[in-house]
Length: 158
Image (cartoon, rainbow, N blue to C red):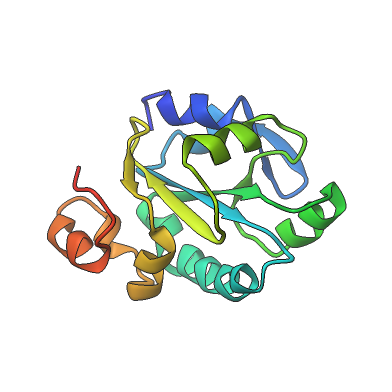
């Protein structure tokens, strides 16, 4: 992901497990980035997270789609406990980036998965539905635009 637009949105550092890493290094090979807004206290989130994790491990990661978790948890302890279940990266809990992303993408319900192109443009505002409809994520890849539009009516075509 040579364009820095997404990196600028996500801040200088992301978490991978318990490590803090440079965002540019983490996202350098990503074709798309999914920003996943979720919280441990949210039942629909708890139901969707394992499905997204399976999709990520089996398909998305290998196809160059990186996921970044943005916590809506009420405490850092809740965030850490929930993030342990996730195979992707996260915006640090104490980062102001969390609030900025929530505002930018007008997040008022969770779970929410916003898919971004390398230049930071929203490809899909309803990635949760798109992944539920197509867990392989193949409709997110170049050349699958027709399928993407059919699967996600709220998405835009690049």
